[in-house]
Length: 365
Image 1 (tube, rainbow, N blue to C red):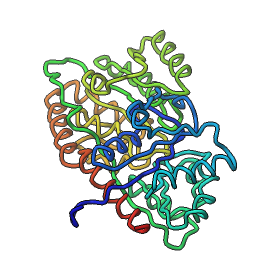
Image 2 (image 1 turned 135 degrees about the horizontal axis):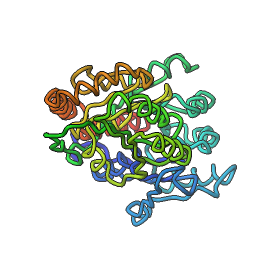
Image 3 (image 1 turned 90 degrees about the vertical axis):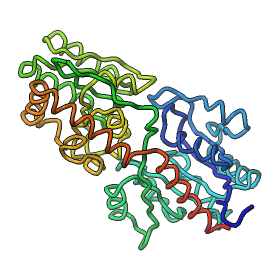
């Protein structure tokens, strides 16, 4: 191997379940394409409210491992066997509750093996990390917001926290042509779950429908709150609100092509949501809540605005202005795509992940 060539790593990834469009699988497939040998292990069957990804590509290579029946001592033994048989250079824990209790034992058996956690949002996994952080050699986060939060709760005097900003495949998204419209389509794309706050989007539509007869509202997504959201949308429809619930979206680009602006009403438990970047790549500006890393993504007035979903007056004024002056919205759509090209390219993300993995793995070389 050339002295300048990157080291080809054997990476073991621990996932709670296999979900389509998961960032973790997206990144691991890119690492495999770059020559790294990736083993994907998972603890639960089903997609946890998401559409399941069978990971047939990893299975075909013998690199998909079902850990659903491997708990306790048997699970620890199985991890030890995986590390030894696959000559693992790096273990990535990505949201698997069952893995946290096993990893200290794995670290004891393989003290030089780097074990790295990945924390996207301020959720229960942060508590699990804090309970078991002695066995982790570092943590990967996506934003300054998450880094600062983790440093504030960590018991380690100097934990190794690396920021790797996520990105999207710009080739999968392209601005649509929507000139000549006399109305604005306001959209929501996301998981139907409390942290994404989908009911706030419905409430926004209910509050603004009378003020904005030139607006219609569309929702895409699935998740544990699916039934509750559908019921609320049906009630809004009976009250004359022009809102539709489209459910699961296999190709997000289709949804962005049908809207003029994306609302991201997330609660404070939020990370660095892909939907903001995907929307911008599609030439769609975003009105996002001041939650998590959303403010880090939005350049006010260029690719969107940071507003809480309950700021009905200010959001209504923005939408009304775009309805009356479509050219102003067209300008915003153009700069949204420009910002996506400058800041959100997935290739930059893959480069950063690869460099980070190399840095952690170098400790065991």
